[in-house]
Length: 427
Image (tube, rainbow, N blue to C red):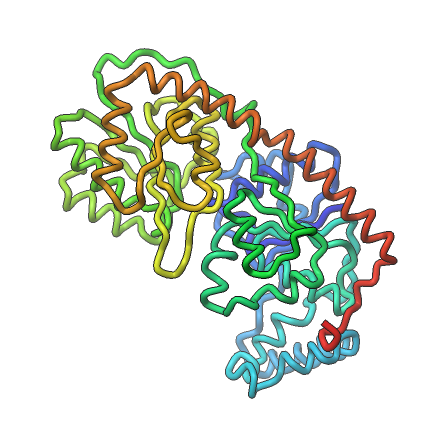
């Protein structure tokens, strides 16, 4: 099967779940092409699989919008001449200054709407990650620049934050013309229903974990009796790492000997490092930055408890499905997370870990303290966590389910006669 993957940028350090899915499709014998608006920040040195599978050879980046006004006008004329007649209403709307203001005047919206490539892209399936890329794909299909059924996977901010910024009808076009939508949790399923997604096109299909890679290591008993805490997360507000630092301070004040490692990078790193210093945690907390998956697995193997104190931000961001929580459980780590979003589905409270209220460092500290005082419970939760992930988040199993969805959607698309050129005027 010839599959197109639509993403915003590629590769991205914090989106290894997309890379792992791509690798799974390649290993199942499918041809994969990645279409990204721009290059990501990661390199083959960071993601081993990028080099191993020569994935960068199959990445196509859109041309950037020209900075020069003259060049921008020139490329706009070329695109309009080549593609505009396929969907004239959409083309004219992209230049409607009364409706879109500066984005139309600058021709930025025009460049974002009309296809950048000159030939039609033909695929058996077009799989888009994050809602805006799904909208991008169905629009390309309207212009006749893309052929194939469009499947869109929603991950979190695209359903939680973006509708607050751009309005609840942001995905009306996508929901009307997309062929299927996948979500990683029941929480996200309800979100999309509320946004207007058709139930008949919604499929719950979580992002998976490679159980052959994320597996428990045989631990040696620690002679120093130091509790080893770990978080693997992008350093952004929604991950709540600031509250983990406060919990660590509380635990140290209670006499707990511990270390806390944070793997991941992001815009809040300097701020969090400054907070750790102000709290007097320099000798207890390490910010490790972005690491390879091999380095991450070593951290899981060395840790005693995994913590992820996610929060709901003022802009509406909320954890939908944390792959890191599933990875930790696959490595038989007990986890402490917060009662938001899809966490209650990824973590079985009292069975594979503990759930506490968000923005409550005292509750977080108490849960960690309880686990530190009950090593047998940690072992039991770790065993149950591995079983839970094996049943619900096995990457191999989920990739086979994804391919089955591809087959179903592709057959339905063929049966409809590939009627993909729908002018926005009739949407």
